[in-house]
Image (spheres, rainbow, N blue to C red):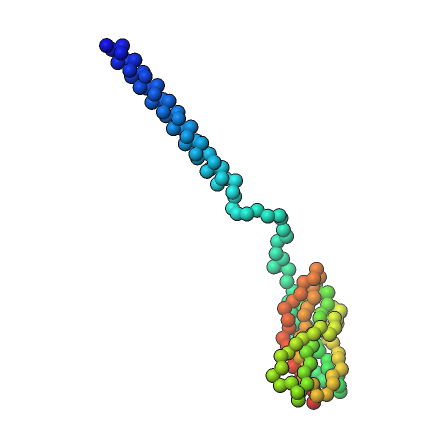
Length: 156
C-alpha cells in the first residue's frame, strides 16, 4: 500500500512539475515581448542628428543711438561693445509724407550696410517727410542682433 501511495505522490509531483514548467514558459513568452518593447523603445521617436541651437551665439544691439541734422543731411551715431565680433551694421529706414500720411503703418526697408569700422551713417533728407531709422548689428556667422531703438525725425 505504501508503494501505491508513493507511486501516486510521484505521479502528482511529476504532473505538478510539468504544470509549473508550462506556466514558467507561458510567463516568459508573454513577458519577453513586453520587456523587449520597453527596452527598445527608448525615450521617444529617434531622428537624424542635428546641430544644437546656438542660443549662446548672440550679439547685442547698438547702444547710444543718436542723430543730428547738418543742413539737409542726417547723421546717425551709435556705440557697440568692442568685445563682440561684429561684421557690420544694417541701416533700415521708413519714410512717410508728413501731410498725406497720418496714422500710416511704418514699413522699414534696408537702405544700406555699414562696415564694422564705422559707427556713424550719413544720409540726405528731403523736406516734407517723416523718417524712421533703426539699426541691426551683424555678427560673424550670420548672427543678427535685435532691432535697435527707433529714431523718428520730421524734416519740414
